[in-house]
Length: 444
Ligand SMILES: Cc1cc2nc3c(=O)[nH]c(=O)nc-3n(C[C@H](O)[C@H](O)[C@H](O)COP(=O)(O)OP(=O)(O)OC[C@H]3O[C@@H](n4cnc5c(N)ncnc54)[C@H](O)[C@@H]3O)c2cc1C
Figure 1 (cartoon, helix red, strand yellow):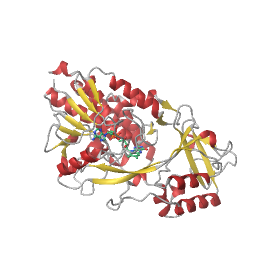
Figure 2 (cartoon, rainbow, N blue to C red):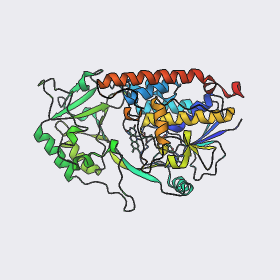
Figure 3 (tube, helix red, strand yellow):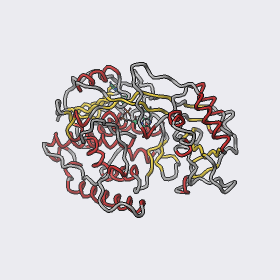
Figure 4 (spheres, protein in one colour):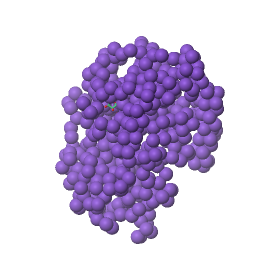
């Protein structure tokens, strides 16, 4: 039995390795940390969650909730660990990062079919089959090798981390607990701002010093994850219609929705670490401290993790690959994770699972049938393989599902209908392809 080489022990690489190993396929997993870090990772854990601790909604009528439900049908491994390391976050699946990383590392490192090597891969001279899942912060040498292999331009953009603060250093009465529109438990701490406080905050952000990109790097942000200063630069109200929107968050002390609201989400089980939702930033550390301390109740705040900005690379997958992220020029080579043009933790996990299924099918000498079009996972897969001269990473969203009925009417009801159809389709897929979910020895 051939050994599959997986490069990168992040979310996608771990899901892929674990899926293959569970099917009896030997795997060698290469991870460069702790010898070399990426700038965003902080620990030696495999599958480290680098920024927000949220895997987003669990409601099936939402795009991310639907993707998670489909992944559960397909037997996703990392989402099970996410559930086991869950912290309260209303209807969102949020994890304690350390517990999650620790549990995945333990499962992978002790798996009898997986050998983990803490070693950096610098080129594409790999025994095949192999999966490259080195993420948006792929080490430079491998990144250069990929650029050469693509015989073209790497695409890249910037993404930013939001700061996290020590809950014990906030004023006791600075906010109120609630979740938007009362959905789920009141797990978020909400800091209300009146107009004067809001204007003071955005003025502070406007004047704050930011970390400048290198001169050779063109700034190209991912629209769904803009740094807060970029949002502020677009207009006075943009922030309070974006991450600081007060809709559905009335202050119980006044009964009214405030002018703007800063939301904080619990990031550790102990509840001491709180992340500022949507507050990704490229402000310098001293500027962040100053801006955060201008928020009412944050006068003595201790910042446990500062926001930061990073280069993110991804490949032009529609040009480079066949379905399932299989390299056209090197057909035994697959890509998974954000490098293959999906964006978001759960999407990266999904792409790792897909790459594992495709390799399993190859090893079994059988053709893998296409994932159903009307599922979220199938739609993501279709998106990254549709020719597109402005290819940009995509996260799960209802807009990529095929349109089936008339538009209009109740949006939630339409989404629920789409979700029902998608779940039926993915369950049928699993039933019709049982071999794809069985041990390799049972097939060959
Ligand atoms: C700064 C930042 C913040 C983000 N914030 C969020 C967020 O809040 N929510 C969200 O949903 N998504 C976020 N993302 C996007 C994305 O979901 C995550 O980056 C996700 O972890 C990507 O998963 P992955 O498996 O592709 O890569 P990673 O999880 O990054 O894993 C790649 C692994 O490969 C290793 N590696 C790199 N190069 C080599 C090499 N040459 N040899 C061996 N090992 C190597 C790395 O050390 C790493 O462990 C963020 C991305 C960045 C960069």
